[in-house]
Image (cartoon, rainbow, N blue to C red):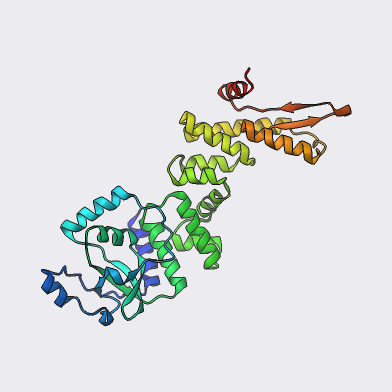
Length: 309
């Protein structure tokens, strides 16, 4: 990321936070007695630009936090660092009552501090309404944390729905162009199994973007399964999808006659069984055919094995 972009992001977040330019440095307390003396009552928090020692027990988790998955090993490593060096980067909170604060950003740091046995953490105290809370939490996480693609997509969706933003406005908020925002949002239209795979690192964003171009969810699920089994590269999946689309284009002619509900149910059941888009073609006098397409020789072998061929 260029210095110019970092500055732009920092300026945007600072504007949201309404932060003061004169931020006082955080001084790590000495022994327990000194710490007790230095830690002012949380009812007497210093100015918005200063760093305050806040009791962890008085900090509520941010209900707008978009991150749902925290790497336990990473938390453990951060906790060990905090035990040795203290918490270097303050968290950000807002006051909700005299002795109660709500986390705006820094949940990972707060969790690690708890693991390290800290009772107080350095924090910036802000004033923010719920909309600002949500926006600050989302932007802070999207820009600073390595969210998985589904978490990013969900964060974008929340900003659109709960903040009433348009995609162009959202892109400006998070410093991404509209096409990037759209690609993330389209991930949420994939079947839940594939979304979970993206979230858990089973497939990459590149794989997912190729799957999005496949209209049929059944085909999406099969290709996804094939990606996992064969360890396919993004380029290989893109080629497979292009071949599939070309094949369908060649077969397109006049639209087939609609089939009955009973036959549609059979067709759907067969498609589910073979993990591919099975077609029933009904002719005259009750005659017809069953078409089971395959994507590769390995796919054909899989179908033949299911047929005990």
